[in-house]
Image (cartoon, rainbow, N blue to C red; front, side, top):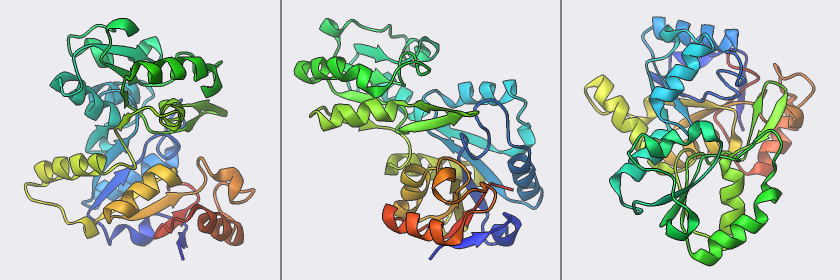
Length: 286
């Protein structure tokens, strides 16, 4: 049974480190949530460490620039680990080939070009790199049915830089790379996943935390915070890390009419249906 808390302060003293999700937890894609920022600043002033762990399909340096542009205070976190960073490292390594066909918005094509590679046409590609829909505001995953059939027929594996299915930007819900990869896998395609809930995301995060701390960080001293039940929460639980579910994010409509305070009964029924039991639930990070 998840414990519903009102503020991070109620449990903050039990953990030395937070793995904090970004989209839907720290910001809405347009601006930071003031209460979330204040909570993380307070946590750090008390000696805690904050690693922003995100499924953003771009390198950590790009995520930092994105946060700076929206006015996110630098003293609200210590470091960033992104699924895009992990995917870009895999591209640069050559493990999956050297010719990649790019699928996603033009703004993220630097996932390839930063490594010295240019997007390849399908007839020369050894693999696909997917960062999202080409036009996330007008397209849906159904628009990619013909593409997916072609990719599967060609036998191309897909590197998915963002496992998220949907994300909320302000009041608009947008499809993510995970939706295309999900349909590609269902059609028989091979997907190489980067980011939450996959174990590599947490292995990389704990390696970075160990570098920062100068010693391995015990899993029981780390709390994962996020609004994605199938990514943030499932990934943490599977990896043996306590999780705090932010119910006022993606699941806000499922657990009551007040995003700040989930309805206890509706929350319990929904979590049971999802088959996942976070240690804690909070309406919004504060």
